[in-house]
Image (cartoon, rainbow, N blue to C red; front, side, top):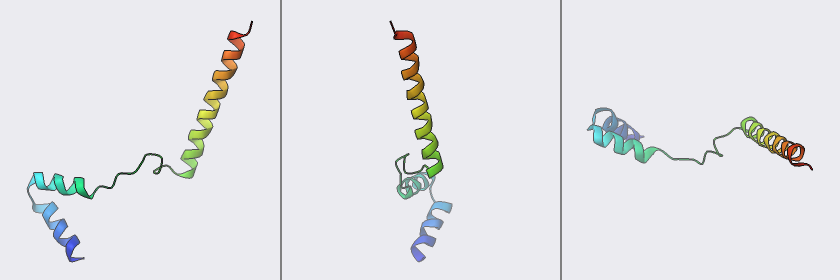
Length: 65
């Protein structure tokens, strides 16, 4: 808890360069796929499947002899 208060004060009243340095260190990046909810992932998969189906159907129609 004391560490968090010290970090907060350092960020709030500190040098702007130090502020950016602290904020960049505290950010934990995630892969974009980990941030998707189950619904968003399902919608992404459905859209990709629909696109693949439409592409295959269009190719079959226009490239058929």
